[in-house]
Amino acid sequence: MKRFAVLTAAAITAVSAISGAASAQGYATGDVARAELSRVAPTADVSALTNAEAVAVWHAVQDETSAFNAKQRAEAMIRSYQ
Image (cartoon, rainbow, N blue to C red; front, side, top):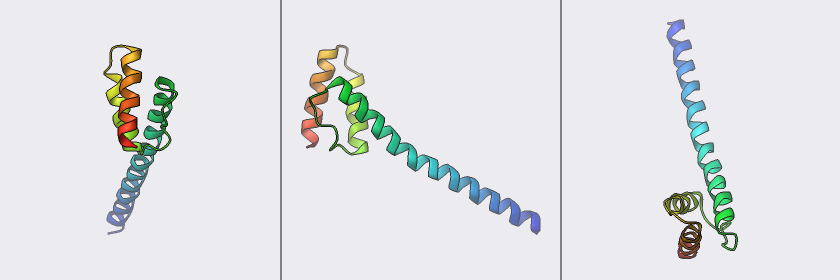
């Protein structure tokens, strides 16, 4: 019975650690996306974007083949979220 309690406590600790890291990852990913968008479209106001919006715009911008198209698409999508 003692072994079962120890294994259960270890499993709960592992799940808590994994879920905590996953929630922190979303924040860091949004920050990275905003930083990259600021580099691609420096005149766009990326600070008002949520993490999900910033990541969505960044993914869409990565599909563009030229820097000009990437900048135009980023600015248009950012304006649409504001």
